Amino acid sequence: MRLNRTSRNAVLLVRSRTEGTEGLIRALESRGLDVAWVQSSPEALVRVASEPYPLVLYDLADAADVAACPSRTSSADDDAKQSRSPLSKGLHVFKQIKQQSPHTQIVVLVAQGADVTTCCQAVVSGAATFVEWTPRMPVDRVAESLGQAAERYQVSVREGEDLRSRAIFDEARIAGKSQIMAKLLFQAKRAALVSDAPVLVCGESGTGKQLLAEAIHRMDPKRRSHPFLTVNCAAITGTLAESALFGHRKGSFTGATQDRPGYFQAADKGTLLLDEISELEKPLQPKLLRVLQEGKVLPVGDDIERQVNVRVIAACNRPLPILVQTGEFRLDLYQRLNVISLTIPPLRDRPEDIPPLVQFFLRQYAAYYSHPIEGVDARVYEVLSRTIGSGNVRELENAVRQILAFKVAGRQIELSDIPPGLLEKQAVPDPDGEIVNVLSSAVDAMLRGGRLTLAEMVEQFEAMILNEAMSRSTVTHCELAQRLGLSRRTFYHKLRKYDLPRPKKP
Image 1 (cartoon, rainbow, N blue to C red):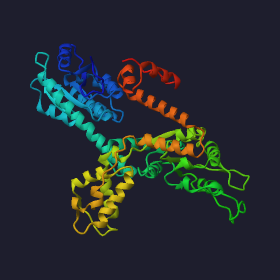
Image 2 (cartoon, rainbow, N blue to C red):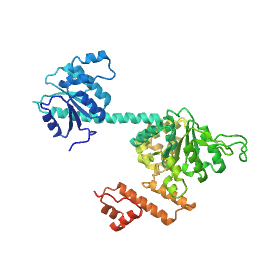
Image 3 (cartoon, one colour):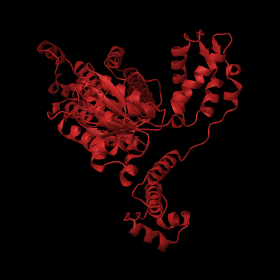
Image 4 (tube, rainbow, N blue to C red):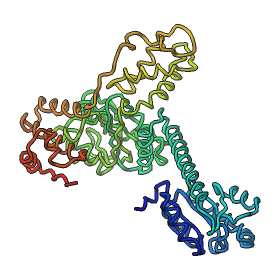
């Protein structure tokens, strides 16, 4: 069976002659390589452009067909020079392949006794290595060279990912190095380029939702030179909340002594972060929905709408879908806000981010506490990774400040610098933190007069658990029912009851 083209064992063979080619392909495939064969350099360039190959095996003796693929950026004089010899044409193709697929490793086949200068020029032009081979020679050295090139390909890809990850952390101005956060920041950057789409940022308390919103604003080329404002929806209530968001006219209510623009008008052409959007009062929700739909605000006491151009980012640490089900949050508003959804993982799921975060907080607070720090004992990171619980990054920041506050002397953070209370503390495992948050939000909503009864809420959680179990399980439906403590008949009855799809048979 052939491997996927993205596998490090995928090889694109470029060789025009048929003599010995089929035998070469069979020999390489018997050694675990997946070989695709093209007979011209133009065809090779098309293949690499459409599906970048990790490895290209190029017979330099076949370079005579390269004249058909001049570089788009080369001049007529350059093309004339390149057409003088098969060697120069082959070298030109190597450069084009590397331009299209920088990580691709090119192994060059040369005739026995080939000129050393020719081989060196091939390497300078982008080839990883060269190997002497003719159809009468065994392929052991060719296979060995391809194996070494495959390893170099993996190293090149990892280094490229590391460079891209470091660059995105720098661009977002967020401390970290984990791949899960790098992926999130790449998603945030793509979201920043869609300048008019609302973004919903979810995550536990203390994970850095406001920092991510600020990063989206900075990476937005259209809005970054305009205001970024934040309003905490939990801190505004009643008429004052409507006035804060949409503004008011003089005399519209007691204390309104002058016209005042709201946050939406103040953030015109920029970004407005609606923090703790789940706490927005129900009467304000349809008014916010209208602003998102129409791009207009109506100040309190006014009868003339004002046009605004604002990108809205909403942040929440409570599950909005549950609040929609309990009637606390409007479904249409949730759908309008949830155009682009980003979820920040808790710090316990990305412990590799702790060292760069600690270094960042040390630089931030060292001067304040008069303790310039030059290094950190690796054991300190281990202790902090065990002590940081649901407080996430905010809790880590407080821990670093506590360490600096009690440090007596020295420029190195040692294990002895950790206060006893912090050293003895152990983070409370929270593998089901999301479920706890959902349960807490649902119970709060019910106690505040939500629509669901206790029985209905239990049924909703049962449906959620069944759906999650089926989406994650890789076992048969019979075994899944057994693990859930249900008979097969009861299991299928519940699937029908909650309108859930039957699991597929393996």
